[in-house]
Image (cartoon, rainbow, N blue to C red):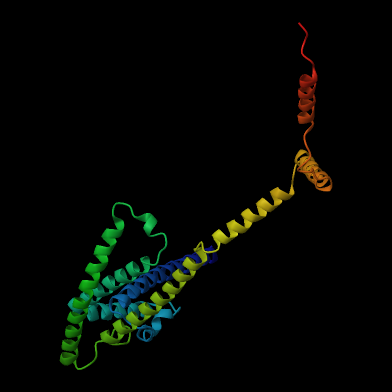
Length: 266
């Protein structure tokens, strides 16, 4: 009886440990998902993310859980100390993404066929507004980052680089993408151009006419042969131009008979 109780006790102790471990894994997973969100909010580079070694650890213990809680707290403090600056950068990045997407739509061949409710006009207004706001945001952020660097004596980094270097890299990438889109659009226009269509149609029409002329009905072939034979006959027996006609000879004989008849005696 005691052995059975002991086995049951060990069984439930194991179940409790498994339940605690499952709950701990669940909590750490949620912390990691939240840490990823705050990494993006703070614009951390891949190298800075990898400095948190426990992020990929599979040793699910209370110590691992505590390290994740501490990392999340550090990220939140980093963000809230410079919240206004991070919000400005987030707004600038959202505006930049809108500009990139709208510029990309300019090379969409189906864009003109989707103009419903003056959609193209609205897109053009939004694109101009975004292009107008973008330089102002960039100038304001540059001033704020310079102020931060003077106060803290260290550079304000975004993805491991300064704000000026980051936007310069993004603009260069955008230019390269635009060049590739232009080339692709030009290739599509050249392939869809109807330059060879008239020549093809003309050649096809000529071929049809030639085939029709070669394919004749039996009646038309016989008529043609008859005309050819008639022409050959007339050519071999030409009619003399001075030869009088038969009808003229008959009328001349009648006139001679009438003249030669003597008048009746009274």
